[in-house]
Image 1: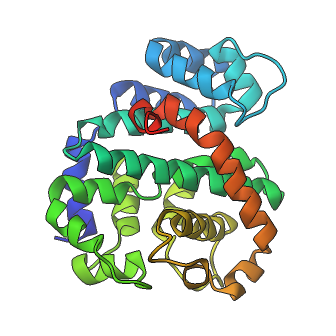
Image 2: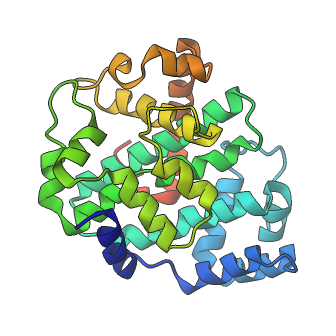
Length: 281
C-alpha cells in the first residue's frame, strides 16, 4: 500500500462532520455573509465554545473581548475562523483512533509546538496574517496518526531510528513514503485548500528553489520542534543546516525566542484542543 491507499482508508474512518462540510460550502460561496457562517457555527455549541476560547486567548492577543461568533469572524477574518474550524473538526475526527494515551499526548504536544513555532516565525519575519500558519503546524503530521491506526507495528519500527538518522528518511525506508506524503493525500481527500496541502506535502523537501514561503517556514518550524523533542537523537545542526536557516533569515536568537513562545502558549492551546494532553502539565 502507498500513501494514497492509506489516506483513502483513513478518509473512511476519520470523517469530517456534516457541520464542517456546510461551513466549507458557505465559505466557498462568495454570496455568503458573516451571519450565514456564524449561524451554522452556532448550531454546534462545542465548536462555538472552542472558537471563542481560542479567539480570546493570548495567541491572538486581541485587546477587547470577543463574545460572539459573528464578532470572531469580523475581527479575525473568515480565513482564520475557517482554520479554527478545521483545527476543531480534525482533532474531533481523530478521537476515534486506536492508540495508546501516551502516544497521543506526545503527538498533539509536538503538533501544537510546531504550530506555535511556525506562527512565531511568520510573525518575526513579517509574513502577512501569520496566525493562519498555525494550522499548517497543527496538521503537518496527521499521516502518523493514519499509520498508527492501520500499521502500528510499522510506526513502532520507525520510532526506533538511530542517532542522527532523520525521521522522514526512516519513514521512506520503512514505508516507501513519509508521514507528510500521507498527510497531504488525506487533506486532499478532505478537500481542504491547496495552500494548506502544498506546504505539508513538501515539508521534507531540501531544495528551496521553488518552495513557497509557507513551505520553507514549515520546514524550519518542524525541525525546530523536533530538536526540542528528540534531544538525545537529533541535534539542531543535523536537522537544520546553517545554509537553510540563512536562506530564510532565522537566527539562533529567533530560535530561542520561538522556544520561549511555545513554553508560554502550549498549555492554553492544548487545554482547548486536546485537554488530555494538557493534563501532563
